[in-house]
Image (cartoon, rainbow, N blue to C red; front, side, top):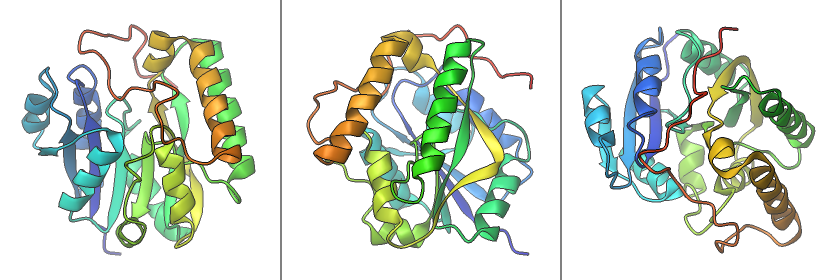
Length: 249
């Protein structure tokens, strides 16, 4: 069976501490028919140099939705895989297994189950709650967290990409539009390790409350198009997450 060509698109801003881990994990994949595009938002650290070191295509980025859209415009793939810079592919079979499942289930858009890179029970509990919530609502209100979104190129183009006017949860709005043209699913073949640095930097209760109120806003008032939640893209280049390490599971 012919392998689909995959465009892996990563929006970045000051990600020199995290991007190398992701790019190294991509290099280890047994699935080889892909390209990597880094859409950088004028980083003030060495993010562009890191992207070039790992032979990624470097394109102009912007805020997260803008960066994803710019990357997609330059992409050549049949399937787009949007990733955040602070995730990692857990092993060398990640792309092979997930792309196979994506095709076998004839999905149009999909995400993976997140697994927090943390030793703290509260982080695992938060993600378990989110996973259950996502599973319960997938038929009527799909959630595709921006840290991992698979989508067919033609669907991305039909919906016009990500809405660049949305300030928070633009990724979930993207899924809402996409399911008008294709089937949504949560991939079960592989989990994806995700960073908890935003929880550590801003506080777990504050971030949890922000996500809950954002969800209520989306349900009752529609998409969040003003910056009422003060949710910023990227991190200060000097911020380091002490607990960021790959689980041994």
